[in-house]
Image 1: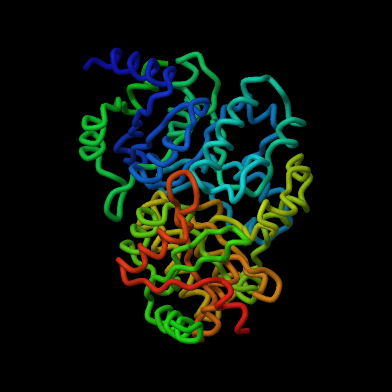
Image 2: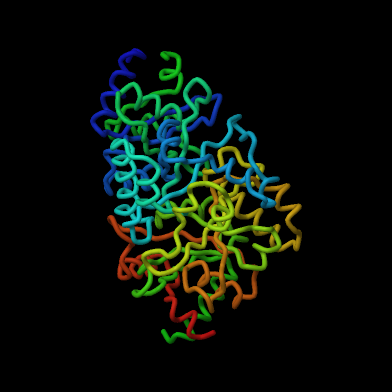
Length: 218
Length: 218
């Protein structure tokens, strides 16, 4: 399939709430994430992520939403603190980027926060709030920290080419809010190999896309 | 099996590096965690946790180690900061306790931090450092934040009866360092039911213990 078609198919899938797989590139993490738009979160989708992908279930948000909800990068919280941890801050990961982590949140109506029902609720409610246009007051009233959904802040595809930015770029192209759920696909010991990711995608009828198919077409 | 025997069996299992399951109690989270001592971390055990349990893979450390490594509670970092997030702090979860979260770390030799190999390395190295008697300088030199292993700080079984304290109490009784790996066992939508946890334990020959069997025998 030509690059253009894959991209069109993927943005259409995202708009419909379908799962897709994004492989960042051999030169970066060499890893695929299972991804879907947060507005379509269900307990079943969370179950698929934890069982079939196996990594950390995160919620990537674009810069605009992060600013509206006054969400800082985790690194900024630590570097503006007076804790010893300051000396432990990760400036650059082994694959060359700064971590995208903000803080982990739960919606106030969860019980433990970690079940499929709870994680789905936190994600769905976050997405609804982001789309409602409400600001930080509503965010603070409806969510708490520390929780079990790991927020990531997108730095823009022109600045960083991680799964955070790649998935948010797809949301932007699909014309929907910048709130994407992602989870690393793991294999034995290591990231699931590109070949095995492709096999999984074929079997489950999930569209597979590579980072370069997203960012070369800016 | 009598309470005493279960407790003896569980501490013996922990000393051998075996997995055990701890159910906190119907009145609390109503949830079981798969647990083992951090010194016995292997990629295979991490794989079992993510596949068979499905929750968040965390590393519980006792107060002494947390103090030695200058590890704060996540809540303290936020409440001592000037971020809006302060108003979002969780004072009490739905099941009645304050969260035990500290910060998420990676060992400096990981690649992405999330694979079975990487999570196992971070956990194993943390446990070795804790046992070596080294202090915060070595901790800061060997680990970074933010990472993918979620540190939890134990408040002591006399103050809190979460999986963090229950597992650390078992380490204390087993006479080994206070570094325990834990992961919530999830079922369809909700926490895996007590009955299904027991079935799993029977099938896999894993010892099952309840919170009250640990704390009533202080």
